[in-house]
Amino acid sequence: MMDSFVFPGLTTRVVFGSGTMAQAAEEVSRLGHAKALVLSTPHQKGEAETLAASLGDLAAGVFSGATMHTPVEVTEQAVAAFRESGASAVVSLGGGSTTGLGKAIAVRTGADQVVIPTTYAGSEMTDILGETAAGEKATRRSPDIRPETVIYDVDLTLSLPVSLTVTSAMNAIAHAMEAFYAPDRNPVIELMCRDAMVAFRDGIPTLIADPKDEKARAQALYAAWCCSTALGYVQMALHHKLAHVFGGSFETPHAETHAILLPYTTAFNEVAVPELLAPLADVFGGGSAGGGLWDFAKSVGSPLSLKDIGIAEGDLDRATAIAVKNAYSNPRPIDPGSIRELLQTAWEGRRPGG
Ligand code: NAD
Image 1 (cartoon, rainbow, N blue to C red):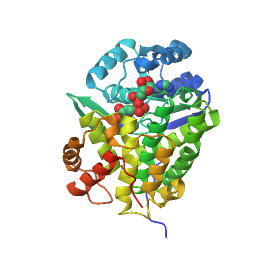
Image 2: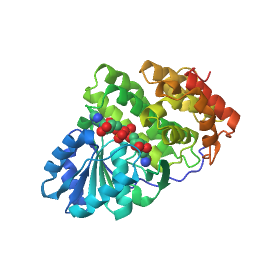
Image 3: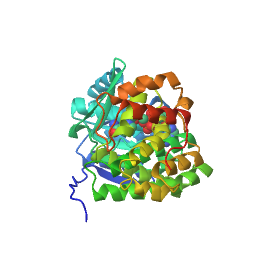
Image 4: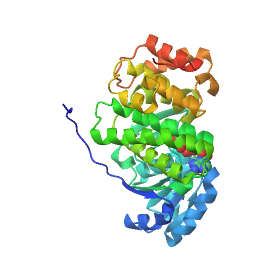
């Protein structure tokens, strides 16, 4: 018998395809704006300038200072640039860092957001904003944070380096994994997550061989949209908490941290809800969801151990203490001993699961 559920509907308009960045002007106008500020990281400034040129009179300029973890000092500069430019909307071109800056501007000014994602991190469909002030990262959710329009342009992902392609895809799969046991899960999100995992499983090996394979890039970006939707519409648990602990308190890189933790957090929760994680075991093989994900990660060259990203064995006690403080709800009870054990396995990079 099917469990009861609530499907909240999806509020963000999505435009998907190749060459769709050319529709940015139309999408800004569609939202009723006469001026939009284009946002990017310093690394993607050139692409942002090309985009601004294509917006013509709608462009209010480019702010290219976006950086990881959305520091409030950068946001303050960006808000000043936004106000000075006369814009009433932003167009965020880039990965999660740029999307984060657009959200931070929107929540302070009421600006509408058109987001053009270029990684698989998945911030674009969510109402979540993580910001760093005085060295501490805090996360909040609000309907004002969720972007109005997302333009997925496959062409923009052709330049994504192979290593970031792999770790960003694992970051996306982590959203799907936690969606399967979310207390507010629903059949629409589950369908999207199953489809996304198959698309990543089949698309990533092709992209390692040829990063410019357009069909595989389209498959991967479609999968990223599905996973971002899962992140934006159902609750996340232990996996995201641990990624937040390492990113926030040990400054580990975002996508790699998710990629490393995923097989271990999956195996940890699989003990409590094997039936809910069975779709992952089906897609990735290996006899268990955690083991199958570890095998997949290894086969695509994804990093497998916390020591690979500079975590010392002596850091694991502190990480455990932070993780069990204000722990998120989770299908398996969280206690210091079992979390410490999970982190030890992840630090050593040992294959988890059966
Ligand atoms: P990122 O946005 O920091 O990008 C990493 C680097 O890759 C940057 O220099 C960027 O310019 C470059 N890059 C991006 N796309 C490229 C492309 N197609 N070709 C070449 N270079 C490219 O990394 P990310 O992993 O996308 O995002 C991480 C950040 O996003 C973190 O701060 C994380 O907290 C946040 N995030 C937030 C949410 C949310 O819902 N709030 C969700 C996911 C991630």
